[in-house]
Length: 312
Image 1: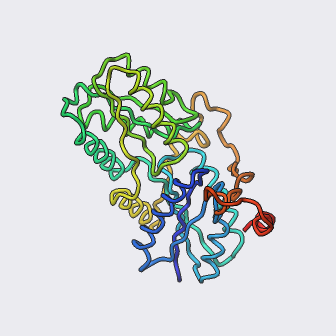
Image 2: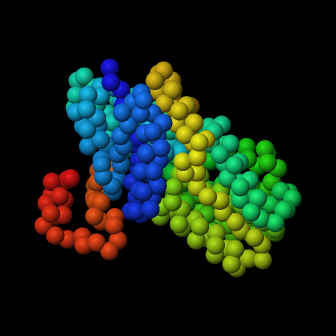
Image 3: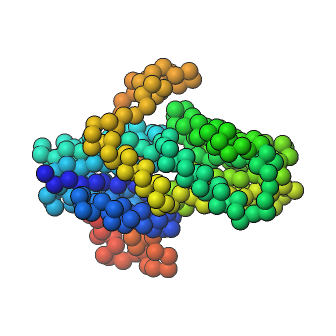
């Protein structure tokens, strides 16, 4: 049976973020092409959609697809939106099987990569005892406390493992505290240096905002505020994908359901218990086109209008 891998991206309004994602796709295609057909799709904004990618793979003879979410933590995208899309696509062909892998989550490879990004950043700076340095770990932030707690867990492991004077979390949206609040808090503590590590794959709107907030604090504070690079296509993140793929192939791609607000009554989130799994990105699925992502090019014209009408 011909097998394939679907890389499940989120999508972005920033062309640079889409380009970075496609770079990861290229790297993973080269990594897996001997055994699998590799394709990709986006949940929102960009093309191809998951549906287009799955149909393309099916027409190429693929009958078993392993869907790898290019997502770090299990918020609503990993628990609702992507499974909803894949479950829908599964019904289109009786002879096609789609198995969804687990998100990256709390992984030893992710922890090692975070250490690598931190030490790379420190190597560019004047030497300073880590006891005089604070660490802020920044996550995407969701309405799911289970996903947010994974960010906090990794933060604590980095704090204890690397011996920083203090560490805390910040979130780019939805969750508390946000990045600006974390920076203001840390600034009151008086650490000579604060390193901010964003747990993000690529650049994009949110990462630009994080970097902007850090730069603003560095400018106004008497202390030093430095951010690290995102994770990108480092070999360690590729090994994390290898691990998730292997789990999916062996039927071990288990989500953390012990503290999931949809399966357990979690304090403050009682109304989510047993909520129906439903996608929330249908109104923005594939609304951007390649032409729209290239600055300086005309976005109008008959051909582009026809493309939008046909959804291609």
